[in-house]
Image (cartoon, rainbow, N blue to C red; front, side, top):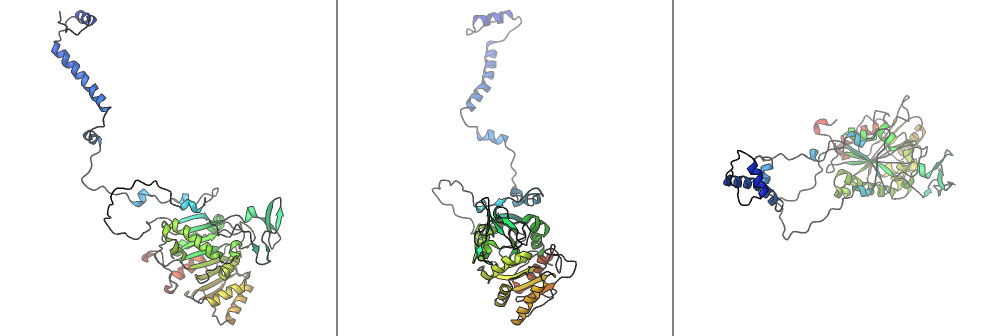
Length: 431
């Protein structure tokens, strides 16, 4: 018979009495019960208080006594991949607004009751190194279109046709182009090569495309203008406003207006600074010298930008690619009054009569004219180069007197110290 403690109920005593051979001393039974209750009490205790530091440390990974290597900038902020910047044929660049580049509001923490001194002096901002060019489309208020002014050539309203609530413009060919389809794209193709450095002498290249063009299909992909800027090695950035969309029309839009070219550059400087990664650098971008490239119908916004744009003294060079279709007086006046700038016109038989006339006008003013692009390009250079048979007007931006003429002129600029345009390439890569 097993002795039963006084706290056991009758049923418990009966079950123990019915189990033959059980001989558990009372002290042993109490010890077993105590051991069973300890984990439960610990679990309940942990529910009402924070865990001990020692218990957390026991589950942490061991920390090396050596300093852990810091993540690189590229590991923390991966550069955009090619597919992110150049859409497929079925895609398009996203349109950006100024607000897209504005700093996002951040909740302010309560000020501390004390100030912490800096351990080192303030240093100037340096753009983190990048590994790819940046090319994007940005909507700008002072791009060519939308435009609701007059046509300087006729002094009449630019939109001179109306039908079904739509406004249209009747071009010189007699074809009507509608505002919502042709004159409503305010985007600008912006390109910043990965080698561009704002603290070095640089230049802004403004490219005015010709008829029947879009920024993506033609300026970027067919004419390779951003690629030519990058491969020139010159410390240059690109701005290419959308003119009339895919239309046989050379209308200059807002660039007809006095001072608009200056407003366009000031607005572009804000976007360039933000895209470059230093929003405070807008004033530096706005001061950069400018080279205007006009292809074909781009002669009209080029001529008016030089004549009434408000920044003619900041323009250091003009490149016309089969583009002297008119406005000879404006080109001649800029060349005559800006002898520190250069002027290059390459042409086919289509524009040869106007180029020859412009050369005659300049010679009458005592301005030397060269017809050889093999010589160095210097401040005051005026060069006319006729291309032979087999060179087509359509491919002129990539094949004129040489392959990729924009690239070649920028290379000549970078190779001439007097042009004050640095090379963006390392010394070992300079061409």
